[in-house]
Image (cartoon, rainbow, N blue to C red; front, side, top):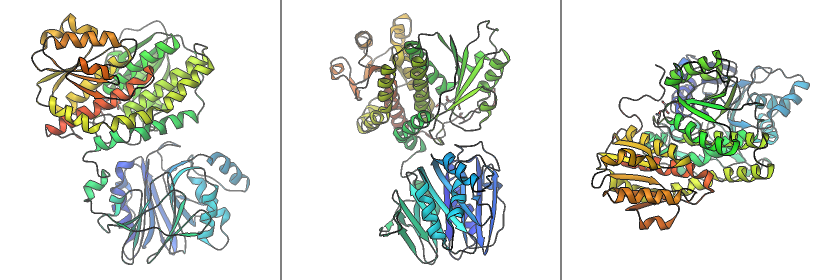
Length: 586
Ligand code: M6R
């Protein structure tokens, strides 16, 4: 996910581009850059935040970019805009050009010289290749060559127009008086205009000071209507959601699909291992613990899961293991320290992270990425479920490679994995009921979250989310452990959130619910089985999935429960007290 902007009109383009880009910084902040046309084409781009761009280019036409790295590490060379060989055409791009290798090879054969590792640079060279005497025609021809997702804006030396195109990545046009705007998202230009055209997939747009022409891929003109937006700038940044956390919860179907799509289009690294260690902190630790259940079930190799802060100082273990580090930010000090130690001890290491080029990637042998896009809310949501996606995918592929499951079984499981976005979408449809349950439990002083097996880590995660953003004391337990101590604290109406999937442990969970009910707990069951209504005080209904995949749906239901509890309690949901999104201290 990146942010792109464009401006043409009577104002200083540099000022408008930097201001509008700033509003898109939530879409990525690995690098930034602008290109301004004032007869000549001028470009400034750099690794880092938008504030590092200090140019004072004069000109009233330009484009800009803020990057969330996917192909190529964050660096000055990989920052947008990209220019063609002559430095006359500049482009910015958000998305992934899937056929860029093929296009790049063809262009190199024709003499084009590339300066970056990105997929995006091919676009500038393609336009150059097609240019005869019309910037618009060359742009349309180039767009027709692209496969994948894209929102693109391009400018050219000596031209007073911006060309833009959209396919599966967002792009909107802001309509002003003698000025027009382009952006990935409406808030970017909302202070200048609230009249917008939302482009559709496969549309190409020519924007000048006084007109906006829209074409289909064949170059035929298309009519699109202008919509007037009545959001405030702040509302719009969150796409109308009240908090980033809620927006990110709702982004999960897409994030899961993007993550799986990226995994499917890559070869899995070759690795040979007899045991696995997983090391992480907080929510990432809970993803690792879920991974343990899945890896052990499918691969039948032992998996040990460690808190990174503990692993760092553990006595040396003789046996070597594939050691997997999970960190959404890639910058958590404890996890990086643990990765250095694992390497020093001679282990083969792999990271699962959401941030391309983050520090952890420098300390491991292999990296698998989640494709969740930037997560702004301190509470990890979409990065958690996409970590699960990577761990499930890893387990299925290696179980098949190691001959622990048949190819047929692997394909069946991959098909189920592809449906997780759909099932999560259905959990999101239960939001109103979950809000109602939140009202029933919000006044509690303390709560328990219980589950068994592969959902035990989801109980831990549910409790962590609840503590973190609602400040209500919450603990997660394996349901069978309650009777060994924690049940002593159950008092009248204390909420016990029980995760009751329809799996081999369903009956055991019902027995545990009866135990706490008998002590007057207020039982909230999260289940796809209607029968559970007989035993619980209230139920959060979720769709039935293949038993192996229930952690995804249960996790999302609990994210919504903690979000709405925190909201009822009036907490600062996106920035809870005492916490930071990235913990770079030990
Ligand atoms: O960036 P990381 O995944 O390494 O972060 C680890 C924890 O700090 C993080 O998961 C934390 O527990 C979350 N804020 C929980 O929502």
